[in-house]
Amino acid sequence: MTGIERSDILSRGSHEPQRQKILIVDDAETNLMILSSLLAEEGDIICTTDGVQAIALAESDLPDLILLDVSMPGMDGYEVCRRLKSNIRTCDIPVVFVTGRTEDNDQEKGLLLGAIDYILKPYSPLIVLARIRNYLALQKAHLDLKIANAELTRLATTDFLTGVWNRRRFMELGEAEVARVRRSGRCFGAVMIDVDHFKAVNDTYGHDAGDNVLRTLAEACVDRLRNVDIVGRMGGEEFALILPETDPQGAKLTVERLREYLGELAVPVDSGTLKVTVSAGVTTVQDPSDSIEAALKRADEALYEAKDRGRNTTVAREEM
Image (tube, rainbow, N blue to C red; front, side, top):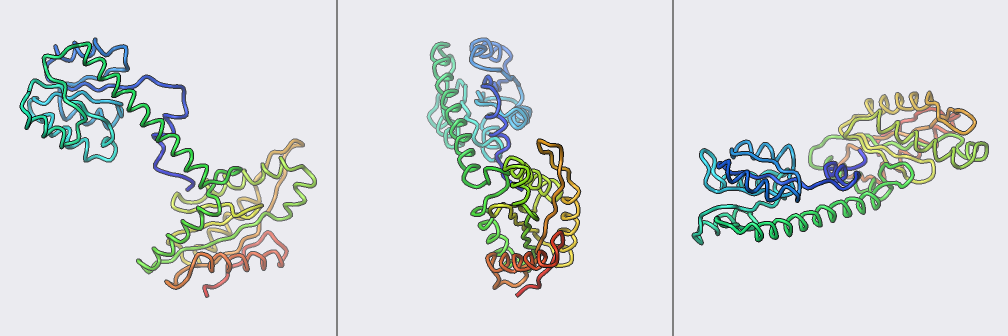
């Protein structure tokens, strides 16, 4: 609900630098032994003599480089390369053919399939080592750039305090949901949530406690809602939700259950724990002419009505 398709990148970037992985695929055990010995200091070596297993290992281990023989029984290197490059999980792994085929059309075929180079047998160990080092360095730089870009995207789209979507990104996702309504005719719930008496929390317990309240509530919303639901912080103590493919009754029920759950949370503060309540306003987007701005305005009006009723309650506002 707060990020995306970058788990592999971030998980690798969040630890100490790891040795790179090199997958060597050759049906000749002698060639595997020679290359494994030559490259042992450059990274962790994974070996196989079979093309089908090579694809499985590439998908599971995500090596940084693949050295691939062309002539193998069963599935040859060209087909292995074609399948690797057509798989979203492995398409960015650089492939280097190691082969005795010297014809130009053989090399052209491999390069057109997506390989980055050919190393011809018999090869010079020093040249092979230099090339592999260069490719591993390039792949590391490529991964480092992905990690940096993912971090920039995270900083630009998430709220720094709570980790949920910031207002700008939330509105973009809301417009995407409205577009989905126009295409499919389905509906979604739009919700505004406000922490009751939040100023009193800051005044009594301090701003650190107030920040902890906001973080705790945001985490609870993410944990209690579905993966497809969208949570955003709109500013201050206000949060907003988008509940895709949820009708008015379902939206009201979901938010009411969430409100009750949030009211039971024990938020840790320096002096122990405290409990806070929230008020919520709910509306539904079903009309293709509606907009996320108009929906949130309705939800906000319902939110203020909930506050006028004494807070710690949920009010639903019909669609325009």
